[in-house]
Amino acid sequence: MYNSRKLPLDMIPSEMTEIWSCMKESCNGWIRDNYAFETVPTCNQCMSPMNRSMKSLPILLDSSYDLKLTLKRIAAKKEND
Image (cartoon, rainbow, N blue to C red; front, side, top):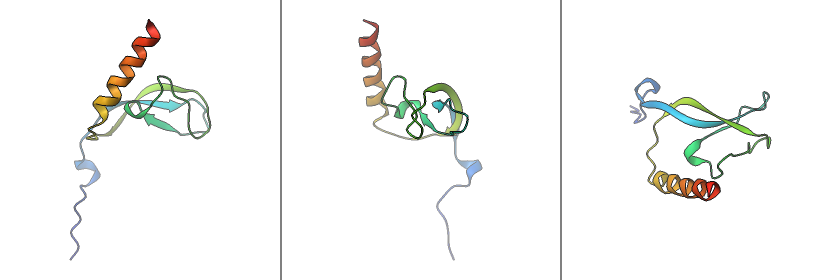
């Protein structure tokens, strides 16, 4: 008998997450904000500009999230100075 350890989709906790979405209508590229290395990223699929929006996504537990957030804040502060 096979017992899957994966949770059903309705049992996976999700939250509204900031993302960057491709502005080109024919492209469906997007990236979570905390995984974008640029302050305003370009789409990796079509190289078009991206805009910020929100999307309900599963919660990810990532230990490097705090490091990336800190680096983004430092870069933003340098740009404002």
